[in-house]
Amino acid sequence: MMVLVARGLARLLALLLTTVLAVAGLVVAVFSVQGGSATLSLPGLVRTARLDDLHAGVGGLLADIQAGGATAKVAALTGGGAIVLGMLLLFGVLGRRRPRLVIIKADADGTIAARPRAVGQAAIALGERSRDVLHVKAKTRPRRRGSGARLRLTAYHTESTDRASATASSRSAVQGLAESLSLRVRVRGRVPRRAGRVS
Amino acid sequence: MTRDGDLWMSGRVRLARLAGQAIAVSDGVAATTGPAGRWLTIGSQHTVAGVLAVEDADGRVDIEMHLLVHWPPQVSLQQLAQQVRGRLRRSAGMAGLEERLGAVSVVFDDVLAETRGG
Image (cartoon, rainbow over all chains, first blue to last red; front, side):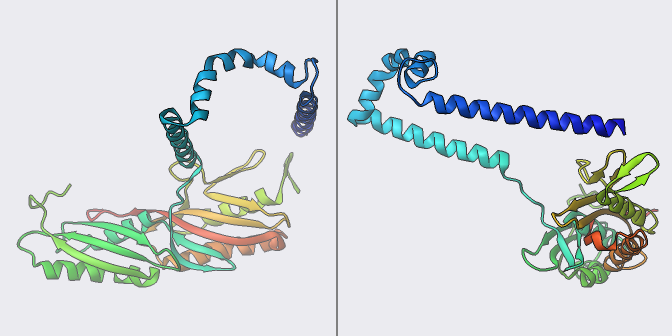
C-alpha cells in the first residue's frame, strides 16, 4: 500500500513540475518577442546569443549566397544533401521493420499465426525424416495479404540417390504441414559439394 | 481491480496471468519471451512471460500469446492454438472477466524439433 501511495505522489509531483516548467517556458517565449532593451526582448536575445559577432563572421558568406553564382549553388546542394541525410537518419532510427507472419487464421476472435522461421524449422524437421535426404534447408516467405506462405525447400541427397525421388519424398513429408498452413511448396534436390557434408 | 494477497492487480494483469496459466497447462507448447525478451506482461509484482496484454479505452484487453511448439505436435497448429484460446476464454469466464477479454491472438514463434537420431 505504501508503495502505491509513494508511486502516486511521485507521479503527481512529476506532473506538477513539468506543468510549471512548460508554463515558465511559454512566459519566457512570449516576453522575448518584444522590442526594447529588457533582458526578455529580441535585442536582449541578440546580445545573449552574440548574434552580432556571428553576423560579422558569416556575413561575407551570406552576401555571396544572396548574390547567386557558384557559392550559392554549392550552399544549395549542401543544404539539400543535409536534408536528405537527416531524413535518412530519421528513417533509420524511427522506421521499424515489422517481421511478417504466416497467418493461419484471422478473425474477430484474434489471429493465429506462425513466425516464418518456425514454419521453416517444422518443414526441415519433417523433410529430414526421409531416408533419401541428408539435409534440408527451408526458406519461408509469408504472403503479403491473407493467409499462407511460400515455402522453398532444398533437399540435399547423395549422388547415388535419384533426385526426383529425394524431392518427391521431401514434398510428401511436408504435405500435411503445407495443407494446414496454406503453404505453396517448391522443392529442389541438390547433391552437396562433398557428399555427406553440408554446411 | 482485485486483491491478490497484499497486492492490487488490474484486470489486464489478471487476464495476462490467466493466459500464462492456459499456456502452462497445454501440452506441446511453452511460453517464449522472444530473442529480445520483449514478449511479457509486467504488473506491479507479476511478470507473465510470453503474453502481451493491451487494454483499450473501453477497458477491453487484447491478448497476444507467444508460443514455442514441440514438434511434431499432437494436433494441427490451428487446433493447438484454439485449445489454448479456449482455455483462456473459459478461465476468464470463471473469473468474471469474460466481458473484458477482447481478441486473443496466438503466434508460434519457435519450434523445438526432435533430431533424426533422437
